[in-house]
Length: 427
Ligand code: GLC
Image (tube, rainbow, N blue to C red):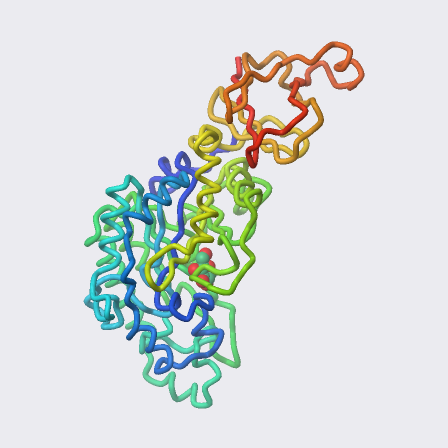
């Protein structure tokens, strides 16, 4: 079984918990047209300010969020403290562009952290390196003002050194005033993204070395992601986004700790009119596919401007909850197995427990190579019923499988669960 090299952060809990909730919540929830709306529609600051003046999530109840996430089987949460728009969800002393200056008036992040901890979930912070509001942030390829006729003039006097200092000040606040934060998720670097002579941004702009040193000093055990544009060995985990790896994620040929992040529909922020909501099968497959390749899944919800979860999000999360209630043993504490998965199946393993996740229901028999004689008992997770380890001789002979292949006998009908799982107890 693969085991990534240890890094500076503590990943031990993370590779056991396996499943988390990502939350993208900011001013962009009001227009409800994607969290990049300000950039996509090139909205100048004056036009975007209306959302700041109207941010008032009167139905915000983070305890409720935490319970919904926990019921879905999620063990940790990562929330956007600041997204690319620059709006801060906490009472920072370094800008006025913050939640406590909106009609809502309260430190939404503090309420969030307290609630999630109280409900038993770990807390991570997403922090955007991009900032389309900060006056020192140089206008570049993604900035809403990139096509402004006077862009060169607008960039005069902007100072990325000062901006890098601003980020360190904010990170210090976030890591010292909200209790022990487990993950810092910085997003993102684009050093080569040149736009009409406006350069992209990377480690020199963010002063990534200094930023990381500060993070490690303030909270040595924190897990840091890989988007600071630093040498890979400095990241504790890697974050493939909107794709599902089919092998253990590798960097320079070495297996690393990794977490796929996905959206329930096609946007991270609340998007009222986007309708590519994933099917129950896709949702469950993404989770199993991650763990079967030694990784985690961070599944996103974009709360509404009122501070609620959209009913479509609630129902997607309940798909996880229904399945996890009976199948969590095949997810928590599990990792990739060295055995080969049968056709249309995925394997996860936790010591002597091997889990066969059946994506497409086969006819009567399931063949597992190199497992004959090695299994003491087999059962379904959804009802605990035994799965016979030996098929009738006559059938086995006709199947022409190797002696070393274990042949499980299945019912003709698939049970009413999205993905049935067989637990094999190895001898
Ligand atoms: C991207 C996007 C962003 C989202 C993030 C999540 O980098 O810029 O909107 O927050 O991915 O992984």
